[in-house]
Amino acid sequence: MAVATSQFTLKEIKHRLRHGDTIFDALTLIAGSLALLTVLAIGWQLWQESHLTRQAFGWELIFSADWDPYGDKFGALPFIYGTLQTSLLALVIALPLGLGISIFLAELATPWLSRTLGFLVELLAAVPSVIYGLWGVYVFAPTIVKPIGETLNSIAGFIPLFAGSVSPQYSRLAASLILAVMILPTISAVSRDVFQAIPRAQREAALALGATHWEMIWQVLIPYGLSGILGAVILGLGRALGETMAVTMVIGNNYNLTASILEPGSTMSAIIASQFGEASSIDLFRSALIEIGLILFFITLVLNLFARLLVWRVARRVPSEMRV
Amino acid sequence: MNQTQNHPRTSAPLLGMSKAHFARRKITNIVMLSLTGAATVLAIIPLLWITLYVTIQGSRFLNIEFFTQLPTPVGVPGGGIVNAIVGTGLVVGVACVIAIPVAIIGAFFAADYPNTPLGLAIRFGTDVLSGIPSIVMGIFAYTIIVLPQRRFSAFAAGVALAIIMLPLVLRTTEEMLKLVPRGLREGSLALGASNWKTSVQVLLPAALNGVVTGIMLAIARAAGEAAPMLFTAFGSTGLVTDLNESTATLPHTIYIYAMSPFKDWQEKAWAAALVLIALVLGLNILARALTWWRARQMGLNY
Image (cartoon, rainbow over all chains, first blue to last red; front, side, top):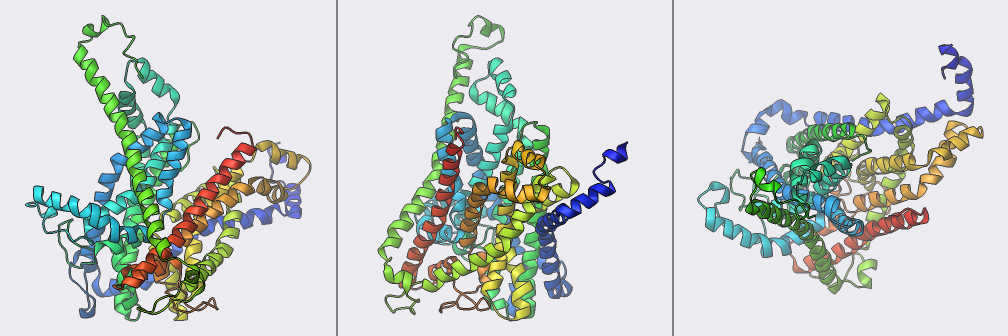
């Protein structure tokens, strides 16, 4: 009986073949798998093309701070440090703002206001990176970043993190602040979806117990959506780590390992972008930059896998439909 | 929300809550809620600032010549960026030709088998691909096309942008296919149409508006990408005539001009930025307007 009702009887298969369904399914499967295969192919290619430096230097590339391509010294530590420093600082700035925006849009604003403001915040993500860089170097850094940096230095200049003087154009602080603006839409959009997916009963229960609106948000909604918000944060971090043009343009390409956020620095993506032109004709140099790309690929891959799993877990726990 | 307003005051002391305690909670409430609004306003300031500044700076150097002439060397007045405009069009065109068919066909599988292991794997792979930095796509296209061919090319740039567009178009198409009412699919199947005919002739046309919106957003994203261009299209001062040649593109030109020490090139960077931002934001606003218009057509309260 089970066999007869199964869709895989011989007759059914013949029927499907005649109408092309099998071919169509196979075609859609192949096309759909291409995204996943591309991810694997990217990893494979970068692994292959960086074999020169992987064999010559091994782990030294990650742990050495000595960068002198023409002396065959490839220590990427200053860039790994620069990437982590600027991205984490951007995250610290963008998280409270992004959370605030998502709360305002999901809980407070009228539907019309929420749509309009939400669209404007989304547009922040649409502005090309290179335009952020252009605006950053010539407008934002001299007018906003320089005074902030000088204030930080005068208050806390004895801490190595805030030592040194701020250049009006290039600094790690400028890169961090621009990154914060660039990842705001990611964080606020994902956490807004998380808030909107939280069942109404949770809110009403808190309000019925006498909580103020803010207490309801802070003590009920945020804990309830915490893993989704964490997913949003990690997606934002992934975006910040890989961001290239804006950072390259404002960070000033200093290849030394210095602590201060007020000084120029460099990041993994910035070093690749700014030196690839010279490197493309020197095999070892090129291999070193591709290996930095491989590290970047690997970090963002792991972060993305983790973030997606987190967001998916919330989506599964919450019975309503929520996708990111 | 004033839940405490009509609250019987007598119960408060029983719970150990004083009037001051209530006042503090209310003030915290108002302050924190206002701060969320302030955060939203604060986020929009950079958008307005960038848009206005680029418009004012850029329009000062914008003229017809800028759209029709090839670039001039440093110090020579006049000249335009027609090579970059044509180059961006060509590169994005190549990306569309590669990415859109694959994305739309692939979306059917993700939408038809959402909870099977393969369907999940495809959606997961697509999500992960969209999180890979664009600079990595550029290096990838470089290693598979530029290195073996030993020349930078517009085609390699198109491949890099196609990889960026693929997950964007695939996921929007999948979402749009899922939004098509079930009855439409069942009606078609009940009339005896096969599954693939239903997909291509019923579901796809029904989802088409949304798919087009998704494609517009993907084009806007791809057109603004400068990082992959460093390894693929590379830049050129002439007009591109062959896919196997290097070519200038708008975002890459902005980068070169902005980072140059020459005043007249920096001025041209602002004008090029105005062209690019108008294109990208224009596509985004148009896509949103289409979504809104379509929702109204369907009588949804959007």
